[in-house]
Length: 394
Image (cartoon, rainbow, N blue to C red):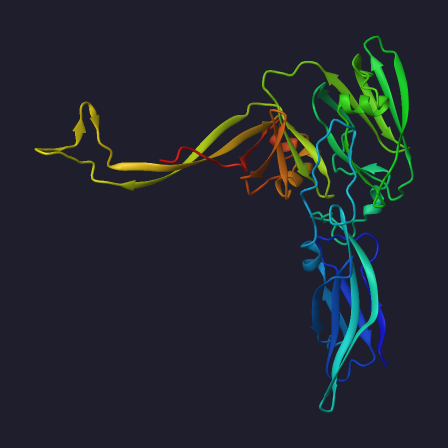
């Protein structure tokens, strides 16, 4: 008599959702019976042991490992590079995490306690995606195999020649893929380039930057040839998947654009461009103490020496925080839906002066507008730099 059934999460479950592990033992009717769930990391280190009483209706034990597994995920792998193939996250917690489940049982016979461990076991790989508002329980990551991991429906983009364009790609098979790029120049003639895109890890995710120069470097590596320097448009396709078209705009516009790089619902990074007016403001926090403001001399007490009054309040420390107010011009209905992922993203970077600064979005509510009733509406947010500075200390 022992554990006769066990069920672990299958497919590519979300680490950000429930991860139910189920067991059934024909000992479940014993006195004070409990199922023992041991959760270990991929290296066999025990993370938690929990004892669960069986369900009164069917005698099974249910344990949700989601809260434990979520603590193992990492978010600091964001990488910047002038390459189209920017980074390939792995299963150590960057895009996925492996955990082991070992199931035992604990009960009493007369006055004796009996505990038997690791009677059934298995390994689960959970992925760092999060369910949406209306697809929990029905979302299947493999439906995106061979596709770009984005909820944007657009496949044509107008970008500046120096503009970054981060977008992730996923394929459940890690075999080498063929990249096809078609360049169009001003007279309408086209040139087709192909290059191989290889995987170095077993998970199948690629963080891509499909800006003009990184794509040109991918095609010409290791020679930094300006293959797309005279292009007015180019298309990009991996394997037989979707084709993205990029129209190059040499005019930067009236305002200096700002770019946010955010982790989307798939646990990978995308770029959101704010091309309209941006305003930077600072908030200063001061610490102060008071003093009398008197200067005691031999024959008098002064509050003013010469033409300068003595201080009665001393600002001895200042801390400065900066906030950017960013504006995006007239999002489409699909972009209003897509940008909700920006609002709940766990980690966001602002590109400023060639450096990437971590930021926090101050806005806490978000509404998906539609042009049917909102017409052409801009999108405004405030982002706070997670980089405070200390001013002069007196």
